[in-house]
Image 1 (cartoon, rainbow, N blue to C red):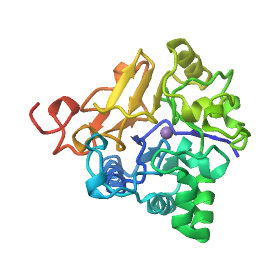
Image 2: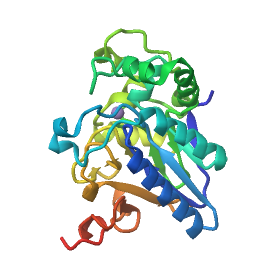
Image 3: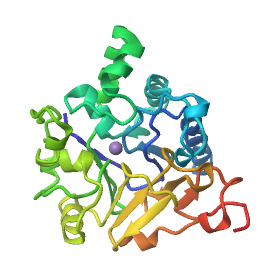
Image 4: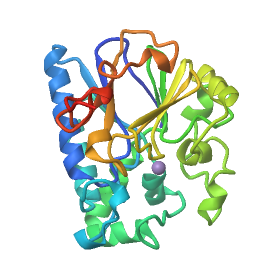
Length: 288
Ligand SMILES: [Mn+2]
């Protein structure tokens, strides 16, 4: 299957990064999507940029403060909810593979909150729900491109590619090593799923090859909610590892033309997930 989603040149696009099993933030972004549908005559899209799964399984007392507000992992429920939402909104719900999803369909097993998060989740789900989850995430893409210039991936745009075909034809089974440390050496697939940064020149080249101008991704935690890197990269933290007050999502005009990440403005394209908790400097309602 082609691993690149081609978004249309009209309507609104809501972008949500790493949820890592947080059902509360999932429900909130679905509210945002429905509000965008209403505001744009039904013409809205919702894109998840990977890592829907693998959150902490911790009791309240063991929760480290730096992870933000407490939640308990609901990975299986989040993936199933995304599939149901996609079935109810044909062609409007899009999802990319993150390094955490990849572990279930050929990638190295992640070990962030458990020695083997892939084995743990599959055990919790049991064989039937595990098969369904693998089927769902097996249909996810590696990148999405929009005529407005935005190129979306899970990790940083560090892959060396000559054209969009290099990503379209990418084999999710290409990783044959054993250790997660070896994955970055797997061309295209490794950097797209695991890179935390990209040199400006490499990022520019990646965007050009994908037919776009700016790269938008998650994978890393930005405690302040988002970060611009140079003119062509933006890292967004919608959920995981961030306090509610600083969680942001993007709302992009698919009919616009974005030449640099500075065209994305707080309060317009960069919006707080919880406006009632966010400072005005992040487009929220709370005085700074
Ligand atoms: Mn990730």
